[in-house]
Image (cartoon, protein in one colour):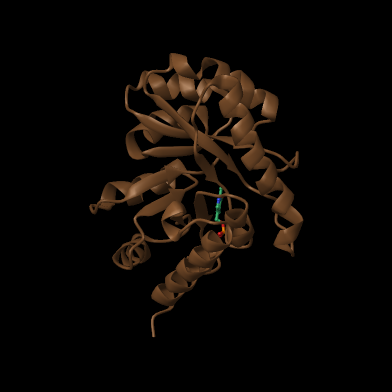
Amino acid sequence: MNDLKDSIDIIKTKIRDASIRSGRTEDDVLLIGVTKNVDLERIRQAYNYGIRDFGENYVQEARKKIEAFTEGATWHMIGHIQTNKIKYISRLFQWVHSVDRLEVLEILNRYGREMKVLFELNISGEQSKHGASQDDVKRILEKVRTFEFIEPLGLMTMAPYVENPEDVRWIFRRMREMLTELNKEFGLNMKELSMGMSSDFEVAIEEGSTMVRIGTAIFGERH
Ligand SMILES: *Cc1c(COP(=O)(O)O)cnc(C)c1O
C-alpha cells in the first residue's frame, strides 16, 4: 500500500481517459505535480514514481527545493510573480506560466537565459485571481518578438473553484478559442494550454488542456 503511488496512478488513468475523450492520447497532456507546501522527500518519491515536472508558487520556498534536487526534473513557476524575484526565477525555473505583464518579460530577458513562457489569463474576471485581461495579453504579444530569450508557448488560467467542474467548462473552451485567435492575430504558433487543477482537470483536458497542474489530488490537502 502506497498512497502517493496510488494517487499518481489514479490521476494518470483519469488523464488518459479524458485525453481519449478529447481525441488525443495521454502523451498530449503533461502532468505537473504542484509541490507548494510539499517537502523534498515527498517530491523525490513522486519523482521515483515517474513525475518529472513540478510546479511551485513561491520563489523562496522553491529555491531551497530546486537547489537540493539533483535529478533531471523540470520546474515550472506557476505563482504570482513579484518583480524583485524575477532574477531568481530566471535562474531556477525552465518554464513560467504566470506572466501577466510586460515588465516581467523585460526583466526576464535581461538575464539572458532562455525561458519558456505562458501568459496567465483571467477569463472569469474574478477580483481575487491574478492574471491579465485579453487586452493586456495583446499588448504583451505585440512586443514579444523583441525579447530574444523569451519563447512564447501558450496560455495559462486558473478557474475559480466550483463544486461542479461543468460550471467552469466554458472558461477552458474560451481559452482554447483565445489561443487560436491570438496566434492568428500575432502570427504565432503557441500550442500550450496550462489549465486544470485537482478539482477540474478532466473537464480542462476535454476542452484541450495540454498541461495540468495538480497538487492536492497527488500530495493530499495542504496544511
Ligand atoms: C496550488 C495551485 C495548483 C494546484 O491546485 P490543487 O487544487 O491542489 O490541485 C495549480 N495551479 C496553481 C496556479 C496553484 O496555485
